[in-house]
Structures are given as C-alpha cells and as structure tokens.
Length: 491
Ligand code: AHR
Image (cartoon, rainbow, N blue to C red; front, side, top):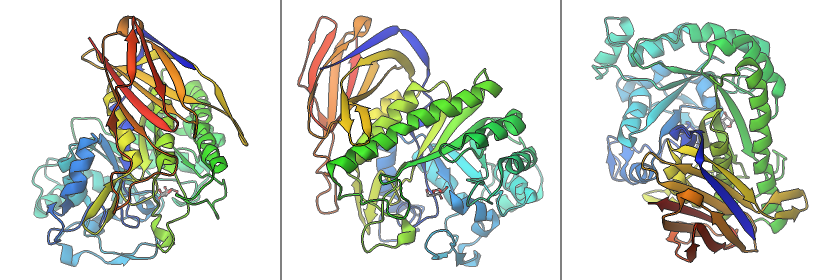
C-alpha cells in the first residue's frame, strides 16, 4: 500500500514548460529522415518537415528544441548551412558515422521547424572549433534588425525580419568532444565568447554555459566560481547506461529483470546529481538566478543489431517509459533550480519519442509519458509527501512509486505517478485534501519489454483509467505493475 499526501495550500514554484524539452542533433536519422525529408520527398511534408512528426510533436506540446548538437555543435560552422542548397558545402560528419553532411538543414530550416512546432529555440554555438567572430556573427544574422553585413546576408537568403533567439548555448561538452578543456580554461573561454553573444533583440537571450559531465562536481565548482556572473544557465549531462560500461551498454529490448531494476536505479542517480550540483550552485547563487539545464538525459543502449553504430538508433520499451517518468518527476520536484531539461534525442536517436522508417512513424512509450505529463508545463509544483514500500534489487533499494503534483492556472491539479515494480501491483490512496473534486485518469501500462513497432505501432498506448473511487477527499485505486498514471482533479 502506498499513500500520497497533497498540500494544495503549499505551492513550491513554477514548473517551467522547458523541463519538457527535447534535443535534436545532426546525428544518424534524427534530423535527416526523422524530421527533415526535403520539399521534394514523397513523404507528406511542409517546407521539407515531415507532417506526421510535426503533428505528433505538437500534440505532445513540445516546448523547446535544442539544435544542432551535441558534439556536432562544436564542429558546426553555421555559414555552411545557409544560402542556396545546391551551393552548400558537403562534408563529413566526423562525430557520427562519418557520413556525408550536405548542410541542407541549417539555420533557416531549424527556425522554420520551430515555427511549425510552435516551440522555443535553443541554439548551441561552437566554442571547440569555432571563433568568437563566428559566434557573434551568427547571433547578428539571427537577431539584428538594422543595417549590418549579417542582416543583409540574412535578407539575401530570404529572411527579411530577424528571428528571436530564446536560448543560446556557449559550447557543448567542452570537457570532452567540445575541446577537452579544463574547467578553468573553459570558464575563461565562456566569459570571452558570451561577451559577443550580443543583445540585438528585445527579449533577453538566455545564455547557457557548458556544465558538468554527470558527477564532475569540480567542473561545476570552478565554472560557477569563475564565470557564474556571466551566465543564465549551466548545463548538466547524464545518461542512463544500464551496464555502466560504455563498451557494452546492453540491449534496448532484451534484458532480464535484474537489468530492468539496474536501469531504474541508475536513473534515480539523477536525484543525487541534481541535489549535489544544486548545493554547489547555491553557494555561488543563493538566489537561484542561474538555472540548471539538464540538456541531455535519457537511456543509452547498444544500437539495434544491423544498424550503423554511429547512428545510435535504439528501440524503446516500457522500461524507457519508467525512466522518463522518474526523471520528469525528479525535475518537477526541483523546479526551483532546474529551469530546462532536454531528452536525447527527438527522433530515431537514443531515447527517442518518435521512430521512423521510410514513410512510417511510431510513437514510443516515452512519447506517451511526455504526452501524459504535459499538463505540468508552466504549472505550480504542489507540496506532496509519499509513503511507499521499497523494492529490493541486486543493486540496492529503489522506491516502488515515483510521483509529482502540480496545479495549473485554472486550478486543476495534475498528479503523475509511476509504479516501478516489474511484477507487483500497488494499492494506493491519495489524500487530496482541499483539492478534492472531479477526477479523470489515464494510464500507460504493459509488461516491461513491451514496445511499439512499425508493424504493431499501438501495443503500448495511453488509455482512460476509471478503476478508482473517491471517498471523501481520498482517491483510491490500484496501480498495475510497470505503469504510469496521470490524474486530473478539477472543481
Ligand atoms: O546525444 C549524443 C551525444 O552525447 C551528444 O552529441 C554529446 O553531447 C553527448 O556526449
């Protein structure tokens, strides 16, 4: 039996919609094929963007999309991706599979994609192999409205009015693929580069510094100390790798129960990471002005057999749905510091919400979790308290239930829960207190290996959940094993 207590009187801060963000890199079939097929493709598209994918992402309410990388960002020279497509440079994508990058998807196409999705943009600049001038000119090209060489160039390329840049990343993983820098060196580079990310537009550009790799607390300490005053956000990257061994990460679809629980245990490590990096940030920024930006998270398995190892294509099961629910609930609970999070990656790469094959598309279990959790976007986190049993696993104990609760501007309360047990249901009571009212429920559940394929795309899908009672202010129901439930409670 588990019990969740909600205190509707205690609001704990805004859950910025960007916690439900996504990441798209020039990697494998994420951008090309996954999103962008070109205007002449037989696959139905609008200005080259797949209609089916855009529609699904809008339904999921994608709030922000990071681009162009990843490791790709620190080798990306934005001028290669503008102007007539036939004259754009063809080059090798050195990070991801050594394939030809024809630059047919560049700045204009990315901005068009964000326009179609109705989402904010998050552009990641090149510090590792790019110049300060190049970064400054990109921002000028994107946002300057007066007379200047870059504004003229943009107009020549068909965009009269400047766009608005919402978020700008100054480098990516500069401790690794972005230049193998030491934190002191990067922090100084950050101070220099960000100086030239000029403010030509009315809305303030939110500048994001490269943060730590997982538990590299020294990186956070040094970068905050040296460059904290110059940033709005600091990134954090943490992937769930079931085996902990990057050489043999484990299969996305074939795993035993022990590996299932290990995956969840490793996901829950995110909690410690968020809290420890926050504690360091608190010392330099007690007002919590600087956001922690978890701009790469998700599962990372061995690629599907027979696929290009550099393309990072993996299937997605109910195990991934659990990983998504755990992380999103953790982010919600820490919304005072976590300002954005971007799952890696949008389509066909790592823990994708969508997979495509030619003209076919499937929504993964992870997609459905994002869709069910979308009600938390821009809502206020409510104080909640959980009593539940623990699951003993070979790698230590994990709680059986993951949860978070918010209230939106209309006073509707949204509760998201996951039962992490592979085989045990969980009777539950939720003490709604003053929040009690009309309840609607929806559920995603299945055996831990269940997934959606191109031949059976609807094996895992969200359904209405009505097997509950409301007695006074107590909501009673039983959560099936390996399930995610969303309740909406309104007057
Ligand atoms: O998401 C794949 C890669 O993982 C990104 O390019 C890089 O930033 C990280 O190491």
